[in-house]
Image (cartoon, rainbow, N blue to C red; front, side):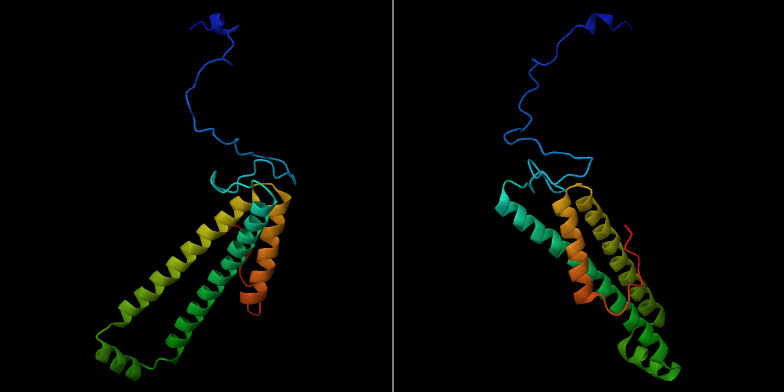
Length: 168
């Protein structure tokens, strides 16, 4: 097919209809910047329009990132509780308690594994969301992620950083 007749066409005046551009487009930076002009954080509706919205957005990013550490802590505590239950259960006590409650050991084990898998899935989703926050390439948002991780670790980190800080 010969497209040579299109070579000189100017498409700048074509009407593409209303594409919902009542507001300026979100800026999509692929290089590090401190500029907050037209900054959208993850969603077009999460738009920084001035100093006040920037401050609230940074507080939200800090809270979200600290929340990730809370989920990790919840997961660690659940795993420790399950391990403690398993370690301390004697066959007679376990058998009597299971008969009294009508549950089987297999059902309890399956429930524990399902809860751990759900907590893991939440952690993975959460970590990728934080990665998207960081990938705004905006210095303010990146700093807020770091501050949130710091505060979250102080509040929920326990005694060691046994799990990696990678995306998942």
